[in-house]
Amino acid sequence: MMNKETPLYVMSRALLKELLKKKLINEEEFHRIDAENKKTFNK
Image (cartoon, rainbow, N blue to C red; front, side, top):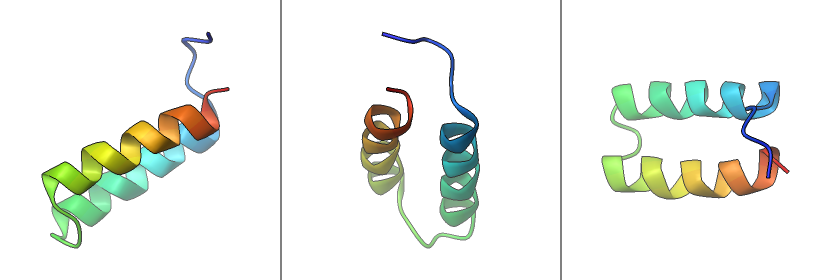
């Protein structure tokens, strides 16, 4: 498995952080979505 994060994953995580900061998602949602993004983008 690759340890290097892809640019798309990095961008998705930045967007998630913005959503969390603006309280549009909560901490649990952040972690759940981030886990899915890791599987999707870091193949």
